[in-house]
Amino acid sequence: MALTDSNKNNSKNIMSEGGHHEIEAAKKLCLATAKSTASSASTMMDSARSMAATAKKNEATAERVVRQLKKQQQAMAAAAVWNTIPIPIKIEIVSYLDQESLISISPPRHGYGRSPPCILSKILPKVRELDLSTSDGIVFPALLKNFHLKNFPLLEKFTANNLLCFALNGSNMRFCNSLKEIYMDHSSNNYLGSRQKDKISDLNNHHEIFLFHYCCKALERVSIRNLRWGSKACRQNALTQNVLIKFVRNAPPSLHWFRSDLTPDNIRMLRMERPGIKLLN
Image (cartoon, rainbow, N blue to C red; front, top):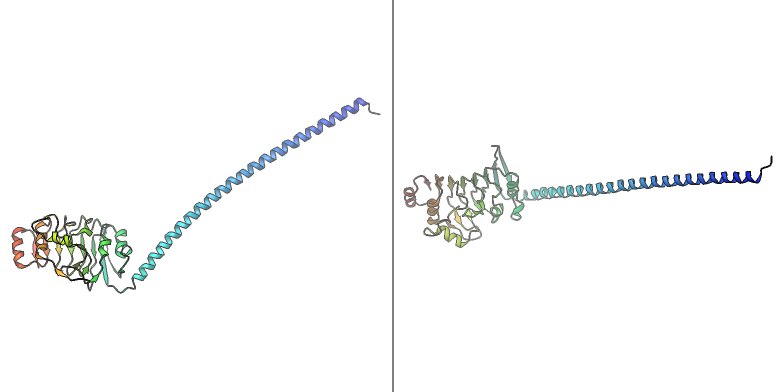
């Protein structure tokens, strides 16, 4: 049967409408696909940024660890070098837990800020007894000056026999508020100025300035036999009697034992003034 013109037009319209729907459906599918792809790309970008941030953080952590390791290696290398220097010095430590340990080291003549005593003062702040005595009067002109004992607030007993490196006014022990005993026999001072020497020796003036006046608040026992001014590099002189007399007169009430080079006459005089102190020479 032949199609009429009206039927032909209807068929064309139906086909045209069907094609239009297919095109619209295809457009919607493409748009959805594009949105999905964009969303996936955004997620991937976020992941990439997160990974980059994590990598940067890990890199910074790794650099910090490397720096710490380098410092440790440098410290170990320096200690190895120092231990090859034939300078006999002994550091004896009694910790706050009553555990005794003896460390024999050979510190350098330079770089005292990194010397073993300085390092020990930072890692063992609760040390109560410290012995820096030497065997043959070694010259360390800045050892205690840089060491300063400021990291030992609980130090009670300090020994530095036969050593050439401390201040007679006690300035390098000013932070040791618990210091009870000082033993510095056969030692010398080499960085106390002449003005300080005059003040420490003056019996009539500067009563607040005397031997160990920076660290004398809790002193109970002091031994300074054969203590001298100066060092091996310059002329050494024995402490004057005035220095010793002034110390006894200004010593705290806690002091009950003092060994020095006081003459017998001065010992008799001072026993009348300070009967609570046992004076020896």
